[in-house]
Amino acid sequence: MSQLFGFSLERAKKVPKGPSFVQKDSLDGSQPIAGGGYFGYSIDLDGVVRNDYDLISRYREMVLQPECDSAVDDVVNETICGNFDDVPVSVELSNLKVSEKIKKLIREEFDEILRLLDFENRSYEIFRRWYVDGRLFYHKVIDPKNPKGGLIDLRYIDPRKIRKVTEYEEKKPEQLRGMDLNTQLTQRAASYFLYNPKGLKNSTNQGMKIAPDSITYCHSGVQDLNKNMVLSHLHKAIKAVNQLRMIEDSLVIYRLSRAPERRIFYIDVGNLPKIKAEQYLRDVMMRYRNKMVYNADTGEIRDDKKYMSMLEDFWLPRREGGRGTEITTLPGGQNLGEITDIKYFQEKLYKSLNVPPSRIGGESGFNLGRSSEILRDEVKFSKFVGRLRKRFSNLFNDILKTQLLLKNVITPEDWEIMSEHIQYDFLYDNHFAELKESELMAERLTMVASAEPYVGRYFSQDYLRRKILRQTDEEIIEQDKLMKKEIADGVIPDPAMMMDPNMAGGSGGDLGQPVMEPDLEGQGAATEADGKAAEMPKGGEI
Image 1 (cartoon, rainbow, N blue to C red):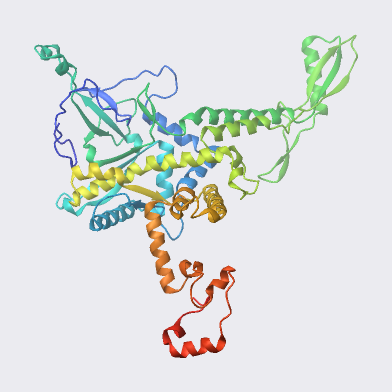
Image 2: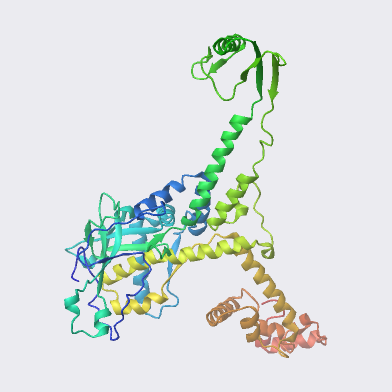
């Protein structure tokens, strides 16, 4: 399929040698349609959602709930940890086997991408949009007169107005005659983005076709394969949010209706007819009824006798022969301060969003205890944040690919090889991870100190560094260079000179070894005779 709209960077793809009757699963939630079909209809049997438009609108309504908004904030704040000095994310190229010149160019282009996104200032909003909507679209704008200048702008697109579509070739029966089975089953497909400024409502497929290379598309990775729809991480919390909202509303209604005490007036009407009995009951009720209401707007007290509410007293007639006029009191609702059910549904909401329930409320202080006391929920939450960062990095990956190809830094073939080794390093602000690392290091140093007497007998220094301290080859080489430099500069003492008992100057006495006291006069004569011995440092002066 030729260019549809925008620009295309990829070279013509070769036909695979072994054709398959199924398409490659990209797990992007694109809508499959047959060639020439531009209208789609759906029947909502569940009564939940009809299309992506309704789904995203529901997600955005969910975060208006205070508890849901608080949980989403916990996730976003944990994932994007920006401060005033550093950008929340940087590119990591230590595993990339290219020249330093190429690495420098990649870092410069990545900084340019962060500038176009204004990621230093808007990182919170960008990630929150992606997390809530479950997808993120950006239009990569270039200068048609100077495409080698790279991207000049990145414009956000509302996900309710754009959709990825995969159009399949529709083969007619007469076209299949004389073809082998593999050719009949093989389908050619073309992917593009469909944009409608009015929104893609009612499952319509009418809109503007846009080439896939001109759009950056990053989704959550959560997908409903039955309906072929990309879901947000908020999807499994829809029921929990609705339940919490309903239980709170019912609690308010119950307390308003059951909190006050009410009285029941039994009025003796004797043998009066029904109509006269009702009239007599109304007269008595209006005579003893007092309904003075305070108006908070005007500061006045007014009489609202004509209004009747459910919170007021009951007036019931009683015939002759009964117990006569009687007044009883209905007690108010019991256990009105019970909110166990509210806490249960709050905890359920937090669990559905993978946020530890211990973070509800926040009235308890933060405990900087041992890592062994870390809750399992916090460990799961830390891994969940790591998965979110990995998935969100696809946004930078796609934009960086476009930028490098436009500026002829690399070729498409090079990118296929290099993309696996380009990583993105996010600022980490998880206190539990920091505590875990510090305690692991303390335990390792304790083990090294315990194994020190056995070095040279059962273990080697290299074994301690690799197996106990868990140092990699690069770390060992780097630390050795730094230690040599610091020894040469006199920052730290030389371990070889400290451990040698035969070193001149009597430094062996520092190790507790018995040393003969030298003749002071002979030592002075030798020092004068030999200038080199005079310059030799004494133990402890290094």
